[in-house]
Image 1 (tube, rainbow, N blue to C red):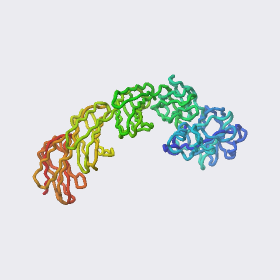
Image 2: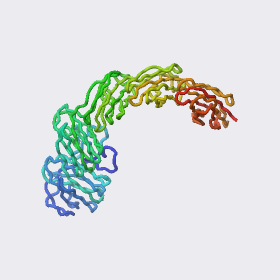
Image 3: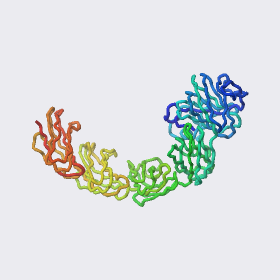
Image 4: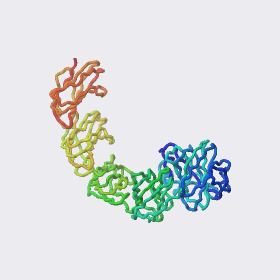
Amino acid sequence: MRSLCPWVQCRGAVVAASLALVSAGITFSVATETSQAAEGSLPPAIVAADLEYNGRVAVGGEPVTVKIATPNKNGVMTFQGTAGQRINLGFSSVSLTQFQVSVYGPDGSLISRQPTAVRNYYATMGTRPLSSQTQVQTSATAYQFTADSGATISSSEMNGSSIDLVELPATGVYTIFFDPLSTYTGSFTITVSHELEGTIVPQGSAVSVAIGRAGQNARYTFSGNSGQAVSLQLSDVTIRSGYVSILKPDGSPLGQPTSFAHAGAVVDAQVLPTSGMYVVLIDPELSYTGNVKLALYNAPDLLGNIMIDQMTVTPTLTVPGQRALYTFNASAGQWVNLGLTGVSIASSTLSLLKPDGSKLASTTIGSSGGSLDPAMALPETGAYTIVVDPVGNNTGSMTLALSSPVTGTLALDGASVTVSLNKPGKTARYTFNGNAGQWVSLGLTAVGLTSSSISLLDQNGTQLASTAVGTAGGALEISNPLPATGVYTVLVRPGGPYTGNMTLTLSTEVSDSLKINAAPRPIMISRAGQSGRYTFSGTANQQITIKATNNKFDSVAVNLYTPSGVLQAGATSSASNFNLNTVTLATTDTYTITINPALAETGSIHLQVTSQ
């Protein structure tokens, strides 16, 4: 019933470390604030003279408020326990800054508290670092804290805290010992409860669970068979937050505990490793209370095959927590894409797993569909798996289309190429040879794809530039020259499940030099997506003006850059004649003027550099 705070950094001061239980099965006599002291002897570790509070509490009874008003004084509380009971201690309304809690059983010795399924998982199977306050046993089924440690409760934990005890080892009187740290004084309320218990049946009626006591857990059992697949749905949740776990017959968690809040949660389909009695454990965080409805299903994951560039598959998932897993064979170096259409599941996670089961790529898909596009080629030859995993309680269906990309080559300043993407999720990868220092641009015309993204990748797959384009077309403009001589890739990736055509025109820039105060220079841009780059030599402190005349573009951007590539002046205009703001040159050097038509326009313009 504890949060993950000792394992991860999540709250301020926390309920940390361990607690042990067991008590002397006899009562004792001490002067206290209460009138419930009895006669007998204390557990060996407790000194009667140090006690200020002595009280009793009933398991399942009313909460009791404990007050320790004198520095360096302690308190004890007893309860009658029965062998085999699972006891939860809830702490609320804590004003005592910090205090340790230990529980003694009928034989007077201390034993470890019951670790929650969350802590058990992260200590024995998880990857997070262990708390410095724990010692993990070599057994894979559980772990325990050291017997001489005590659970530290803090008033800074605003929403209280809780402790879960192992099954009580004997019937008798148990003693809870409260030991304030330093000279702290104050009070707290303790609620002692037994775990709620019940049964749940796979594919049976949903079970409503009401946890009304601070610190209380709920444990529902079901009989399972080896190889059976079960999933679990939590709905109608009013508990602020907590964890749900399925425990194997040996008590260890079946997979990672799942967090839940008011929105509910789903434990995905799990295959039971052995036959026996399993447990669904509801473990609210801190001292939260409320209701939850549990539904246990035994519908297995859907399994099947899918082939690259072949027929589509349409899994239908009818049970919360159910998944679909489709496998395909592929070779190292292949590129694949997955298109998702006809989606009736509100939200799903799509993953591509490598042959060893590790994740290669994943994405989240809504009801509008989309695609899964791995950023790298398949790394090895073998059987890959596509996993469709609805988020939360969602169910429904979708159609999967697995494709290899359209491939081809482009030639700088060569013929345009029309790309046809006729299958949802399908992409295109076109390569070209480029030289270090070249300036290139890509025109995008005759676009039938509603939405797509275009990227330029270098030899290592690093993205150098990208742009989004719709049916109006446009251009991919690269802000730097090609960094090295080699093979570059143009990647066309449709948005969502869109299909259609697009024409690609790859060009080098129109370029030359200008002279200050020379006659206007006509510049012709005749290829879609092409831009212009003209240079001139200037002198420090010289005032110059860039003049554009006879503009035949519907819209064009003309910009002036310093030798270091900083924009010094610019204008975007559709006017026949316009000027850039007059500027003073900072250094004697070579300056650059760029001409960028809007979208994929072609046309002409005259440029002149003047100086007074």
